[in-house]
Image 1 (tube, helix red, strand yellow):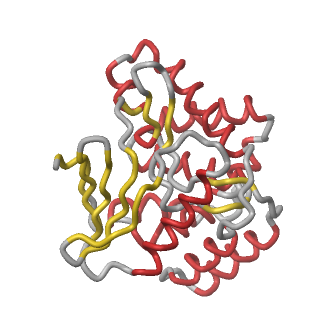
Image 2 (image 1 turned 90 degrees about the vertical axis):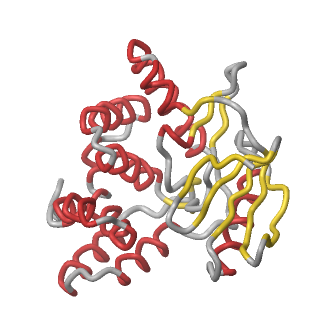
Image 3 (image 1 turned 45 degrees about the vertical axis):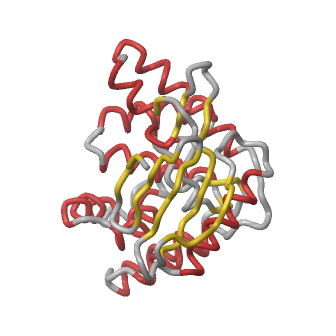
Length: 246
């Protein structure tokens, strides 16, 4: 098997026409089954994504086995073809808009997840109160929110067909929260210019005011704290401190 990616809690392998996501020992069984269930549910919406084939155990470790999609991700394509960066950014946003146009009523609710993550953080009670108050006041929608939508999770096959991978964090909720999350992911990856271009273009294409999306940023930043590195934490705290961001 060929290693595709390594993370703190899992290793991703390619085995011919299959992708195997192998988790560390003692990884939460409910989390595994929840991820598998969410992926199966989103598949039914017709979004192009690898089909889940099997939930199993390998050497006493949980594994999710899916179709392998052969191609290059959008991050690679952007780096290899800088002259096409704008074209790829437009493609990236159009794919996200398509996902956000779908609903999947059985998914976990984004607002519930955000509230839980804020409560689990080590932020002061005052900041938690302010963030939860803002969260409670946000419009409650039911759009499919990928939760980790970044160019490396969009695979383009040779024939141009596009697939979206890594649905571990999918929820249903307000689309602008998912956009705020993508904006932060660009920034956390050191791509500040791309982050601003993305936010501007998404606002124009969707007709969503930037200020509305920006109101989600402190909430989303706080929800990301628990798995952030020390360097990422400094950046996220900058956004969390701007609770009065318009």
